[in-house]
Image 1 (spheres, one colour):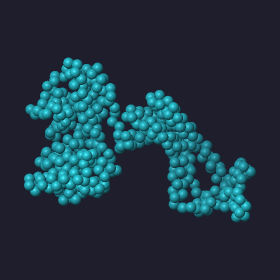
Image 2 (cartoon, one colour):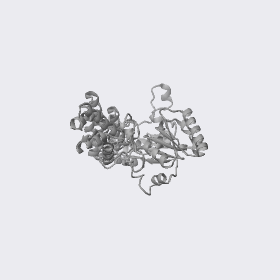
Image 3 (cartoon, helix red, strand yellow):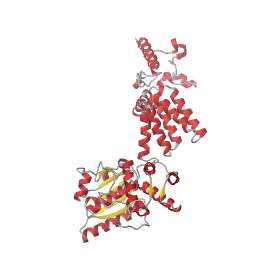
Image 4 (spheres, helix red, strand yellow):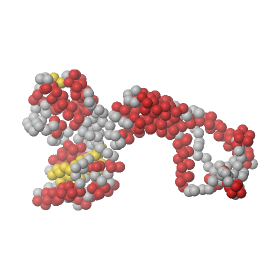
Length: 436
């Protein structure tokens, strides 16, 4: 039986020492999977572990080094710089020359290193001095240099399931050497599931909560972690929500696409996930207004006004009362007829504006407030629409000459845009008659 320093946090003491003890990530750690076979055979390669906190990135790096009989050398990107990288590389070279052993250089929070710091690894990865293993909670595509990414394989680690977390919790309660087995704690299955739910896929958070509950029970001379104890410990627990991180953008994307897909229930769920995670409500309100224009537009112009009203109500009422107005807007937008016609028209017009440069305003559309401008015929042939039949100057051109007859806005056959489309079609018929 292995006994460890009980002054260490429980999460550190319960860190697995073999693949058999490792919990979760079966999608990459089952027989036949490249990472599993590489670990089993001791074939090292540089890699990036990308996943949420508490999913076992550091532990997996340690296991890789142990199974490969390699030196494990950790570096924290939060605390280290190029100087520390050079020192680690020098030590790895010494180990290679004197002990003939390989080195796994593990860089935690690697996304915190800037470009020059990341570049410092490249020559030493190339010549085999170190096998680079980086851990990140951020999307490597955005957070890491392409040069470093091209030399390392990315493995995606997933949040632990509720069953995974219960396995970790039960192991900690049963282990008398590293865990809490010697305390004789009594924990009901219902309370265990409460802890697993509160941990939100994070094994480290789960063990920290369990350790805190054990200390609280001991303070009351009890060996029972009951409902009251769990409620006290879990009262300050919050969901994982990486503000402005990859998960943040995943969730706002899910909200937007649920509204676009006319699923009010899913849209409400993602809205509540973000509110529960502590998302800035003003940010949510801005995005809801954007959705109203991008995905509903003129199919139901009320959507934009409702979104703006919800934003104003949220600002006036504050939290939690104002959150209901955002929910109302999200449900309305999800149920509204959809059109991205204005969104597409805007993008097409913007592309023309950027590509064609400063095209001249046609003379007949120019204002003529001075005698000189009048002498230059500014506005001379302009047709005042209100003086025309049906208040429409049929056949008139309002574009710069090179772009005449451009058509950006194509209303869809949904909502109010059905009527808008019919009107525009009629006006184009008038244009064709006038130009004959």
